[in-house]
Length: 129
Length: 225
Image (cartoon, rainbow over all chains, first blue to last red):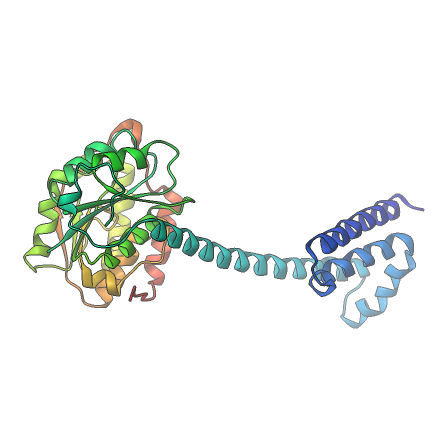
């Protein structure tokens, strides 16, 4: 077994176990983690059955690429850009929601009944708007 | 006209008591929006006589002002003054900023730091401010000399229509562009700005570029009501 095969297999198995543990812990469906599970399985296959990598040659040639490595790098980068875009969008959405929640809590905590503020001055009680 | 002075504050325990007590002489209510300070800003503001709203997480100046505007609109105030809590603005100038609103001469009044003694502003900030003010003037169609000033007064109708969305320093230009789009009257009055060398915070180059981009892009209208 070549060193890269050992590294790929070990990494794939560890990540698959971590993903499985996360899946069980959070009680999520397999579908939500399907992308990652498929990725780790492919990685394990590449390590344990190196011939699998060369079967890509057919796909590679169909797509007009010279070697499987071109296919793997090009599509990996494309997928990663897609994932980065999606995560960025999701973070921005969550950021907006978080800010709405913070403002909502702040406004709920404050008493917003209109009072005559001049009368309120100098007291140490909870002041309201 | 019931007036409220909204002060967004972040770790301003050294100055907030003085600002609140002086602002209370000119406004019916002083509202301090504590943007998750880690010092005694909230306690000191409350003791001095301000109403305090506290964020459980830091949102930024724009976020704090937005919270203050929402609370004040709900409470039925008619005129709104905003100023910094770090002592850069002089509360005794609140009547100057508020006067055009009370006399129905303007809908937004900007306390311009560059109309009175422009040299008091550090050169780096003056250059950045000039660029952003030109961009804001161009986008809004109104001549503005200090688009980034936080010392302002608003009529209620403006905030009902033109509530900003930006949580950072972009709020300053955004609200002006929204108001200009709706043909609200914008006026500037000269104010003094005090810059203490040890306490120079505010927008940096990165913030400036973000403001410039959002000014060119122009914001979409977001009303409160």
